[in-house]
Image (cartoon, rainbow, N blue to C red; front, side, top):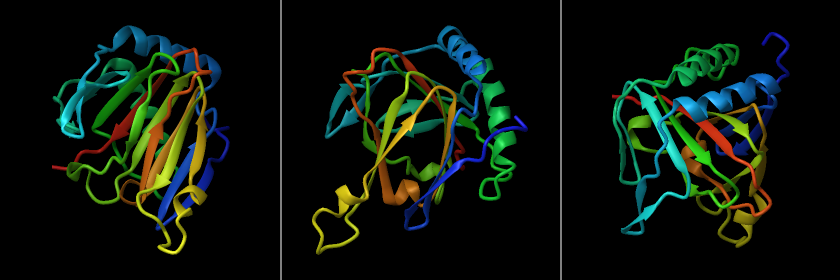
Length: 214
């Protein structure tokens, strides 16, 4: 990984920022990881509470970590990370240690999302649960089909400009082997989503690392 290209840095405003490492994993490494995640993780479809009612998540999930994680009415208990996720975390930490804004950060939980095709998605949300602390780092690795990750501010920058939300809207394409770090105030000031994409016929898996504070 010594020849890793520098990340694309994006400032979203309000001290929110993204670091996007394109092709962080080589194509063979990314493909091997995806196969192991398919075979070695326990996948399930959970329900979440949305607008006061229970609905099935439009994707499959798996998880692991030393701390319990709760979001949208879902409780993910403490359990060992699957072996490929533990190995991936080591590589992630090595990369983050070379970034001044992330040095020394260590994940203790991983949430995996499996999008079977373009009909699977994730709605607008922020990873701002109290147990993640103030200005949490959220680190994700994508393998499989390229899918969009959309960003929009949680509130308008200007009361006079009703189109402020649209003007600051960002569409980021995450491809096979990409690594994305979301930091600063991103989770407090911005929302993100994986929209449905009719043209996407192949599967995508994201491994999202967090640090839960107790």
